[in-house]
Length: 198
Ligand SMILES: Nc1ncnc2c1ncn2[C@@H]1O[C@H](COP(=O)(O)OS(=O)(=O)O)[C@@H](OP(=O)(O)O)[C@H]1O
Ligand SMILES: Nc1ncnc2c1ncn2[C@@H]1O[C@H](COP(=O)(O)OP(=O)(O)O)[C@@H](O)[C@H]1O
Image (cartoon, rainbow, N blue to C red):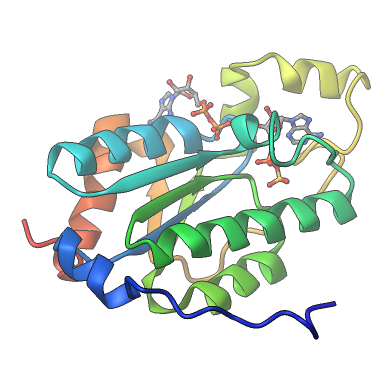
């Protein structure tokens, strides 16, 4: 489908953009069950990075599904397409030199591996590791209750699978830490890797 389309070189290069921002571009790929804390932690990290002077942008599951991906549901095929589009959008933001956060369940190892491959060395998988019982107890949107009652089908952890990361760069066990500690662990990872010079 791209046979008659020619890639256009940019007047402002990727390196120009990175140099201007004075930090490395990165893709913080949060993954975990619904209610695990992806949005909460990703927002806390985004705030911290913003206050450190980093150029960031956050893509959040619920919000993206209201716009770009509002044609998609929750069967396996739609979830794969959801993550494919998120990966492509993230690549554009990475090209712009930003530190991108993506907060999607992203339940399949293969899709996250594809995102890792396409994003390159700035890809950081952040496993928001919260046991199902705790997510279900938190149930911030009342969705687990509906899923258990059979009112929502294909619900992750109940009637749809979640494939946990095998070797995430950052592993957050949220039942053993506060939101602040979790966010700080992510920021420290970036500092330790020399991706943000602060
Ligand atoms: N069936 C089903 N399964 C899982 N989640 C559901 C479902 N239906 C609606 N929701 C709400 O949609 C949010 C998950 O969307 P994602 O785009 O992150 O999902 S996925 O990555 O495509 O699996 C998820 O948001 P989070 O709770 O923030 O994860 C839910 O609020
Ligand atoms: N240690 C913790 N880390 C993250 N979230 C926590 C923690 N303890 C309690 N919570 C609460 O759990 C809920 C997680 O919801 P949310 O961030 O929307 O999760 P997700 O985006 O994964 O669906 C929030 O209400 C948050 O305040």
